[in-house]
Image (cartoon, rainbow, N blue to C red; front, side, top):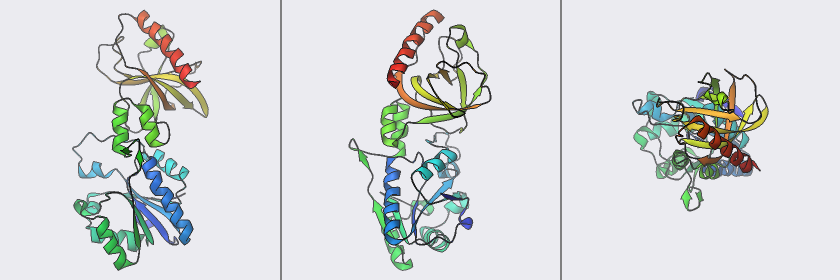
Amino acid sequence: MKIYYGLNEFGNVKNPVVTTGTFDGVHLGHRKIINRLKEISLKIGGETVILSFSPHPRLVLFPEDNNLKLLSSDSEKTKLLAEAGVAHLIIHPFTKEFSRLSSAEYVRDVLVNKIGTKKLVIGYNHQFGRNREGSFEHLKEFGFSYGFEVEEIPALDLDNVNISSTKIREALIRGDISTAARYLGYNYSITGKVVQSSKTGRTIGFPTANIVPCERLKMIPSDGVYAVEVFHKGAELKGMMNIGVKPTVTEQNKRTIEVHIFDFNKDIYDQELTVVFRKRLREEKKFSSLEGLKAQLEIDKTSALDSFS
């Protein structure tokens, strides 16, 4: 996959078959659109093109809104799109100036003059241009004028639910990682750096790596204990993760992400780990003593190992 950091870098593509959007998470709904792009490109001898944006438009349009959480970082999204078979990815800087383009200017200046769109494929209820004024009906009119075709893809239904990034975030907020994985088409993960912690886990035989996500806006699942796979420098390990405030060992209401890796005893401070969620084991709870916590962690470890088998 070729990557272009801005529309001005893009050019010389035969019969571009285009879609556009943020593609956060690159979930099954997105892949339905991508698969259609690939079908059309094969039919007309074209090449697939995705126009995406960075930063996320909401960060520019609503800078005071601190509620946005993302399913994928830019690097994760790029990797997922490459795995999905996209030929060309344009990551265009999203600015307030860009957001002020009218729907007509967006089609003329971006889709036609910059990309040379031969066919445009969009998701259901796609809106574009200043104040989201443009619609599918507008695109059909513009396409007739500028000589490109437009196709709208219905939302992908799974379990009678329209798959969307919002629905996946809602599942993660509930700690429902199995539903999130079904909608994504893969297991959700977090990549972060290992930082210093209180080291209380070592005193009860369960040392943990305290992780700070590399992407500050990364969506973190709800508090609880999870069975996880851990990837470190090419090694695939197994473990269990606690997300929460550790009420048994601290009075501070500070949320942390800590993973205990099974059969692992290396110094990995300041190194990156990728943690893949496999199963939610239980809610976080407060125990009356460290001995009570240790007994529960032994049970959790057995449950985690059983989930892998």
